[in-house]
Amino acid sequence: MKDLEKLAKYIDSAAFDSRSVTQLSDKEQIDLEESYQIQKLSIDHRISRGEKLLGYKMGFTSKAKMEQMGVHDLIWGRLTSSMKIENGKDIDLTNFIHPRAEPEIAFSISEDIDRALELDELKDVVDFVAPAIEVIDSRYENFKFTLEDVIADNCSSAAFVLGNWQVKTTPIEDLKMSITCNGELKHQGSSKQILDNPWNSLKEATRLITNFGETIKAGQIVLAGAATPAIYLDKNQVVKISVEGFDDVNLKIN
Ligand code: OOG
Ligand code: MG
Image 1 (tube, rainbow, N blue to C red):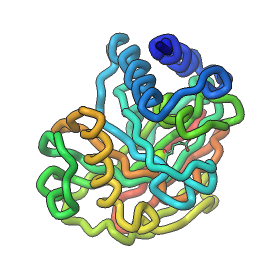
Image 2: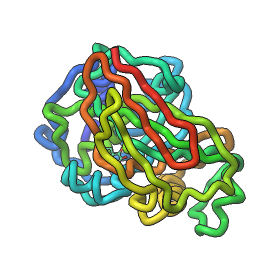
Image 3: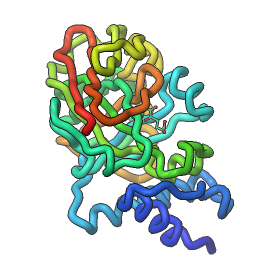
């Protein structure tokens, strides 16, 4: 028997200390199922320190992200209360290893979800949609990982900023999305690049997360994954995400 708890502690303590570590796959052969178990066990450590589970995030839902990171499968991770940053507020670079930011769409969940839903059922379980900034910060040296490594590391989740919510009937299938840094445009794309429609990402989230035996709860959020590649963060930056028809989302880096 592999000691999954030991591997979970290894990755949780790296995250806790903002310290990069050798990839798990360099130490031990882990399969997909085990990598999700390690993720769950590592998040249990956060929960026992008093953090709350606020929802989930999808990853590698766009070609841009798959190509940037060299991983080509959908992944999902967990979002906790310590990761939530208010819109317009700042983060301190010393609490991160090598953070990057990316533009996303968030769903606010209004009903418990305990099974894989079809596209036409999703509007019954969502009340609002919003733009969001996700900050990812792989705990692995040089931001390098295998599929199993990144899943065990909670899909690089580090922080997120939610913009203003709009009603679920707001069309989000094909909206211009961009990320700028200190006023300079870094990447632009369309929400269509997220699995051809961000709602498809939520559909996949209901399948993957409930298959694992978990219920997505009313009041939680789901991030659909980035539409463009992520940008590197550095001191004294202001990162802005614009999604057509929504208010901008801002994050300052100290
Ligand atoms: C993994 C997380 C991917 C996304 O939006 O595609 C992700 C990573 O890139 O380190 O969050
Ligand atoms: Mg992301």
